[in-house]
Each structure stands twice: as structure tokens, then as C-alpha cells.
Amino acid sequence: MKAAIRAKAGQAIAAAASLTGKRFGLLVASSVVATSAIVASAMTGTGGSGALAALLARNLGAHNAAVLGAQAESSAPASSAPPAAEESSPAPIGEPSYSSPAPAPAPAPEPTAEEPTKKAPEPAPETGPVKHVFVISLSSPGYEQAFGAQSQMPYLSATLRPQGVLLDHYAALDAGALSNGIAAISGQPPNAATKAGCPEYEAFTTAPNSKGVLSGAGCVYPVETQTIADQLTIAQLGWRAYVGGMVDETGKPANCVHPDPGEPSTAAQPGGYAASQNPFTYFHSLLDLGDCTENDVPLEQLSKDLAKAEKTPSYSFIAPTPCEAGTAAQCPPGTVEGAAAADAFLSTWVPKILASPAYKADGALIVAFSAVNPAGPGAPAPTGDGLRTGALVVSPFAQPGATDSAPYDIYSLLRSSEDLLGLEPLGLAAGSKVKSFASSLTEQNGGD
Image 1: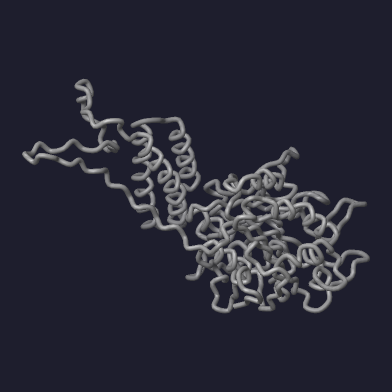
Image 2: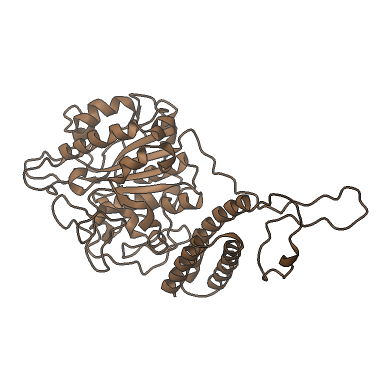
């Protein structure tokens, strides 16, 4: 059933791209009606088709809104002259009319033609000064090793830290990249499977509770579980995940690469791509209707998207390979690894972000640690709280060199990103005790 609906939706959108004029308008109107019927039918039925229908409505609705707006502008009549006599045949039933109706014959001296009724646009989400959020997800060597006096990351601690706000009590939820990454984009808590890096790419068999939170076994979330990416799509704001080393089975760069059911999420080889660094591939809400295929892209695309502000998405999630993220024992022999590899990644990509038109105008860069690096051979072990990693927020609106000592965590990362972009908090990020550091961009020492 789900496959059939997705196939029909794809066919309808493909067909719409090849049509013009009244046939195009007819298809658009028909798709709106059809979508409404699907939603009404599915939501009153049983099983999981209701959520899929809602997502289908979301995607088709977004396409239809854009198409109808463009059609209304391009099909406006050049004059109010009546149609030619040979066009007197009745229009097909259900075909929309984009021209003004002829005035009714009445003795009134100046009959007025009525304008077609236009649907009022949905209000834009309320946002603050930040319009572009960049999140870089790394593996932490420990707070002191990242930001302390003996830092193993000199670019982060000495060059970048003076430019922004240090969140010195920011902490991970768990040591693993996947469990923290999933929480960072959806507010879903870690479970045994995600903590283990998803040994098998298997779907949940349980449904979310009244707050939208899932518990139980599984690591591929059902279609009704939303992410910040879904929120951005609904709000008509752009998003992209830029993921290091993402290639297909032939070794060519590819979008939205994920394991087959039952396969592990680990890197195929040292220095290569690991799906566990890419949390967007674990949500059916993104997989089933093409959002992941369109917006989950290889890291190299970031340079192109940064060139112009209008090409830069509102939300950018940047995830290097496990090696470049700083995870121990994940790099090819003889190459830089651990904290030094993560610092090298920052020194390569952060200057590009800070120089981009979007960041300069209204951007915020969050360097966050979504994993705690197990000490490799010869590497000093993290000291103190093993999950305390610290994080850094850099923005034209931030107080340079400030420190915010509030107790933030991964849910705070999601909550803060949502606050900055005018979105409602998801999952456990909506908890009353979850603090947002969004205010740190405008107020010195601005913890909630």
C-alpha cells in the first residue's frame, strides 16, 4: 500500500513537470482533491497509513502551493476581451478558471469584475536575527582535551573559541555518535540499539507515545516520527545534511546512503563513510517521500551551497567521516587521527562557512560533540565527567569570548536550533528542564 502511494505520487509529480497551460492547472487541482481523499480515507482507517497520508499531503501540498502561485501569475489574461466564438464548448468538469468572470448584464453604469479568490498565505514562522544555522558534529576527546589548557585542538581552542560563546557544561547523552545524532535532530532518546551504533538496520515495531517519543527496540523510526528536517520542510525552509565520504557501492558520491535491512551501520573501511554519522537516514518520514534523497548529500556539496546566500539552506548539519570527526582507530594507517583529525577538519571547513554570504548576514555556527571518543592506543583518556564535552557557538550576533555555564545537552542543541528558526520543540527537547542557548547569541553569559 505504501509503495503504491509513493509510486503514484512520484508519477503525478513527474507528469506535472511535463504539462503546461490548462492541462497543468487541471492536474494541480486534481492532485489537491486526490490528496484530500487519500488523507480522509487513510486517517479514518486502521494501520499506519494515516501518517503516510499526512506526509504525502505535506509534500504534494508544498508542490501544489508553489505551482498554483506560479500558474496564477503566468496565466493572468492580457486583456478582458471575451473568448472567441470557436471556444464556446464547455470546459472539462473540475477545470479551474484563472480569468475574471464576465460582468453580469445589469443597468448599473459601471459593473465591476470580481477578482478570483486567493488563499491567504500561511504566516511565516517567527524568528530572531539568525536565519542560517550550521551544526558541525564531531567526536569529543574530552572537555579539557578540546578547550582546556592542554587542548589537543589548537584551531578550536585558540583560533575559534575567542570568536564565540563557549558552552562549558554542554554534555552528550551517551558515548555513541548515532544515539546523540538521532536525539540532536528529533529529540528521541537513546536506546540499546542506537547506543550500539545500530548493529542491524532494523525498524521499530512500537508506536510513539502521546508526546511523540518512542521506546523499545529498533533504530529506524516510523513515518510519524518527525525530525527538524520535517519541520523545516513544512515551514518551507531549506535544510541539508552534508556528510563526509558518502558514496554508493561503486565508490561514486551519492545521496542518502544507508544500510539495507539487517546490515550494520559501521564504516566499510578505515577513513570511509559510516551511516552512524548520518542520523537522517534513520527516519521513514525522510526516506519514504524523497526528502533524504534530495537533501542528504556528500560533504563536497557544501562549498557550492555556500557560494550564494540564496543557495544556502536555513539549516545545515555537517557530519565528517568517523576519522575526520576525531573517532579513535578510524583512520587509515599513517594518517592523522583523533583530536588532531577533528581539528584539521574544522580548520578546513569553518573558514569557508564564516566567509559565506549567508553566515555573514545572519548565520550561527554551532560546533558540537555528538560522540565521546574512546581513547585509542597512546591517547590520554578524558578526565572528569566523561560525557561533558563543551560546545562553541559562533555568530555575528554572539558575544566574542563569552562563556555560558548553564547545563546544556544534546536536546538543548535541537531546542536551540528550533528556537533560532522559529520551530516548535520536538520529542524530549520540549521538556520543561531542557535549556536553550539561543539567547547566548545576543546576551553575554545568556543561559536560561
